[in-house]
Length: 401
Image (tube, rainbow, N blue to C red; front, side, top):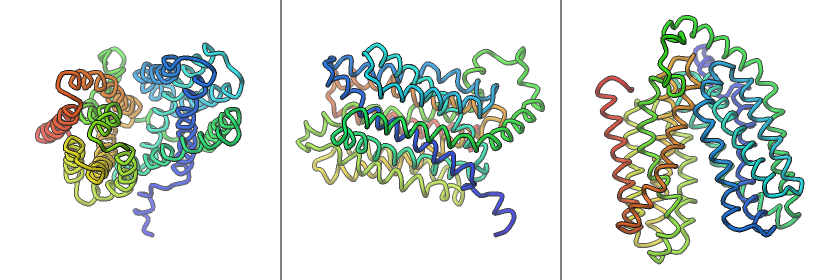
């Protein structure tokens, strides 16, 4: 293998360890998402309280997101990653105990904080490890473990609950978190090297002096906001699908909306494994534009949807599109910022996704109330199309690749 090609490798030992650790953490997360509401209901709490277990977790993660990028850039990737993963693991261990509801909700808040810190630090460190010419490809590979965790975690949790009870199911989720923490230890050397490069880049950038830096740039990266805003528009459709798909499929007489998600998940994995290589060969626009077009096609297919076969095709198109668009936009956000601002660039991108989900669900709910559930998917398709127009406008002005 030529020396230049060796330098461009994605699957180095640190990257594989990072993937394995994050895959375990996400598997544990998906297990707990399935288990905790059932546990609360089985112990006599109301459905509203069961819903709060997810709300508290997500709100803690979202509220901390604006701060996490600055912490990663200022305090270092490794320190923030370890603090986040240890906090997450410790909170997971508490579920093995018979907690009262208030303590369980407090543990969910702590877990949300840990998840947010860890997620931003992990993605930032990953972008330090991935060669810049293969950034989108590497981010796509890193996303595959999330897809696997979403498929495996809930199934494993419910199987263990049925066979062994809640305590052993929670213990398995805790074990995932514990091994995840242990796998972080060998990453210290790679993270310290990345921090040294960041500090060198920071010293060479006189725009980063605190007195000269506007307050908003301490939260939102001044260059990553463009791809993040494209992602904000694109993610509206995901909010609509997650919220209204089941009800719409039942109303159309299709019944099992899970067909959409199965097809989408499979094609998402396929797309994440291949889109980065296609981008390297053909260029960003020739992957991102068709990816967004496939998302529009998938949402329009859900709206039309006369039978289960069309629903599966729509899911496949949606998965292919998301697998191409999300890693590509994430790569653009990271590369738009300097190495010294990758933490803020990463948190800016994630904030756009979080905010789109938070705003999208109630906004599309208002659309459903006014014009029917089917209209949600047409509006979402239109907004997704707008994201393509925004990207092309930024590209025409030389602001994005």
